[in-house]
Image (cartoon, rainbow, N blue to C red; front, top):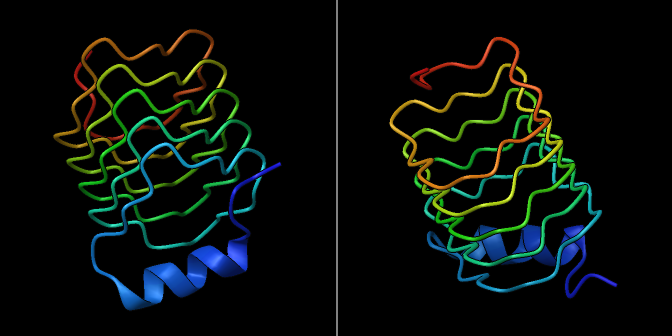
Length: 119
């Protein structure tokens, strides 16, 4: 069971510019369209989350588990995804300009029309 609900996150994100959510369990939640700019989501469990159109610019997602997450049209510009698990994630149309993807697991990830990721 997730540590927080979507409503909890909306409240947290409304009162802080740099949410500290390191290690939090958010698995399976609908987080579409939320603004996680500069948030610390290091080692967070985001498996199967709907992050469609989420704003994750400069978010810290090191070692986060995003397996099966929906990141369609998400803004991950300058995000740190070092060591993150993005197996089977849908990154279609996502912006990964200047994102750190060192040692990121992208096995079976859908990456149609992504922007900014060097091949």
